[in-house]
Image 1: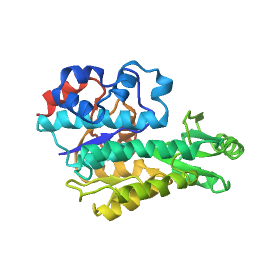
Image 2: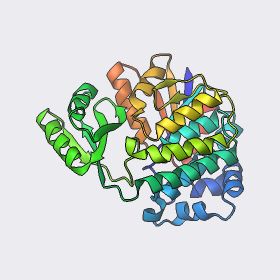
Image 3: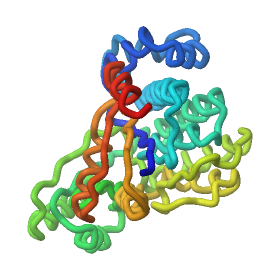
Length: 309
């Protein structure tokens, strides 16, 4: 049985996240006080407003502080993963867990990432849509017809997210409906993430990563760009993180990769249950029956500690 830490991506943030954990767990509190001494992000997480918390430049460091705090509580209770991976922003949480970043560098690079992604998105009028009920090949076939539309996320069987200019996305949605898609659901995001529109952010991120000391992974990490393990060396990780912000996220393939190896227990470090939902849908498609726990609250965290220790 393998234990996998699974880190949520941007979009699962919510007002109140981490407030009870700060009160309950010294390890969580220590992380917050160390990297958010002014409590700028803690205040946003505790009180909102959600509109401000959901700004990319705020969401990314807030989510990462939450993730690091949860990881440190789990670690203090002897719960460590055999494998880690995450969705977009969550990939950095997986790399932190694997020992690639120090806590300070983890939050520093994420804060910078949120800033340059926000800057790259300014002035761009793009649309994003989740296509439900079609196979990936059918989605790829339609998208290939449109120059400025791409698949940003391969989430799980029957759920793929496309992004591009409004005209192209609207036309593609019409084709998807005609091809038998159950629904096409517009996604409210603050930028065309995981598309070529983010190349300026990728370029700046590459320079930032050169200034940070990265270490070899201490546990296997599955990377978004490939949907597979990397060699875990700093040079490879830098290259993949630069590509990640402007390339498709292969989450479905990542989940299938670990499900093919052994029986799995997934611990989703949220907030939210989105990632566990993707795991369950993917597992159903391949006939696997993993165990999934989600950590959004202090009670969730206590339950995981009680069950897994």
